[in-house]
Image 1 (cartoon, one colour):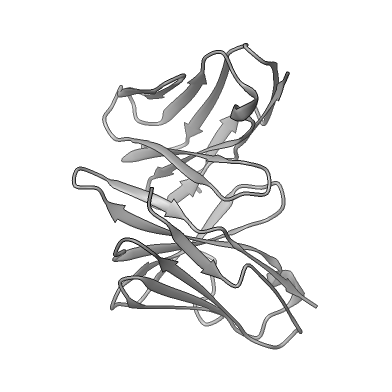
Image 2 (cartoon, one colour; image 1 turned 90 degrees about the vertical axis):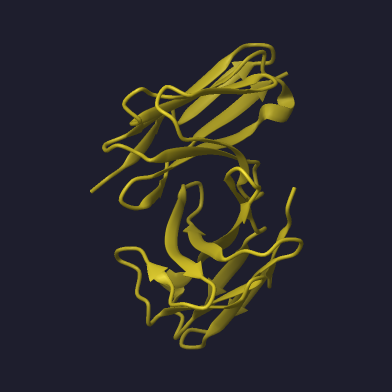
Amino acid sequence: GQQVMQIPQYQHVQEGEDFTTYCNSSTTLSNIQWYKQRPGGHPVFLIQLVKSGEVKKQKRLTFQFGEAKKNSSLHITATQTTDVGTYFCAGQGNQFYFGTGTSLTVIP
Amino acid sequence: GAVVSQHPSRVICKSGTSVKIECRSLDFQATTMFWYRQFPKQSLMLMATSNEGSKATYEQGVEKDKFLINHASLTLSTLTVTSAHPEDSSFYICSARDWTGSEYEQYFGPGTRLTVT
């Protein structure tokens, strides 16, 4: 069946370093969404990408949707301790799937 | 941003009983709500899509007779776990979809921790 995988599963970075998580789908997605979940919290919607090759920015966060609409990435520039949490992608294929998540730890 | 509430936040029930979880959109009308379950340190699994005034659409492998969903109004969807068993213990999260005028955004509730003893 369709799967949405994310890599890496865990990432530890020093505060100030950059961070990237990659999301890959086995099939084409009509859209992709990104969420952040803080430890003990619920997912918070960050952004939705719809167009092939689309790039969107939110302050230090840059989101990309691949040309083939099967992969996506989230890049954080100069991480801060407030960036700690698990980042999930989620995409609409023949069903709506959440990715496996990337847990980010930022070391002060 | 928009607010979605869930009630209760935690519930403990005995095996064989039923539990109802409510999901409310507090400051917008949601024609579509979603129900997920999340196991510890794992991703969310979409269980079903709840559409106001019509039957819910269940994802493959989710028993519709066990997880009853009702979306009776534009601000309320309920999930009833019937004849609960210990393996139903999980974190259940709802989300509601809001049309911003140019695109949809999803807002998640705080979740309900269900423990079946």
